[in-house]
Length: 212
Image (cartoon, rainbow, N blue to C red; front, side):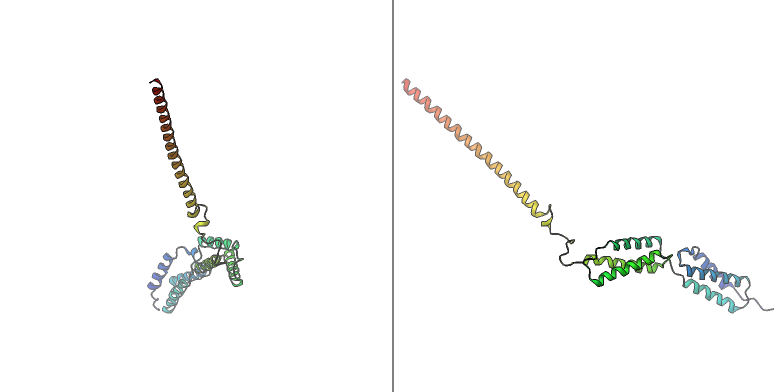
């Protein structure tokens, strides 16, 4: 009677992968199907091992299926793609070259295809996000130099230094005039009082002279 081949290595590998891959829903469907098939085949061999070759082949099949697993794009990534596609759809491309407009359109089509697909890989989602962000950046280069949406000089700002400085100067000047007017009024009043005093003194002197 032939000795049954040892299955310790296959059992260890099977148990480790089962533990690590407790949630296969995060992977692309094709890879999941292949992994599940490899698990079932390994279970059959473990239940009735025939030859060392058979055991070795099942270990290789498990490793191959594991290495072929591809992470699926997350819901957050899909939402990001959807938001970027919507932004591109409202993007003003009037200032772009024909080649740039074509680039934006191609990226939009890729995004729409990915959003409509049942699933896409996480790596592809990252690639699309980078493409979409590059397309969005084209809006910032449209019409340069002299881009009206660029930073405006402070002189164009109603609260900028040019206008506020003028207003401040006007206020300061007005305040100075007010102070000067007050000083002049006080000085004039003093002269008037002095003249009245001199006149009164002259009148008194004249009356005294008449009495004498």
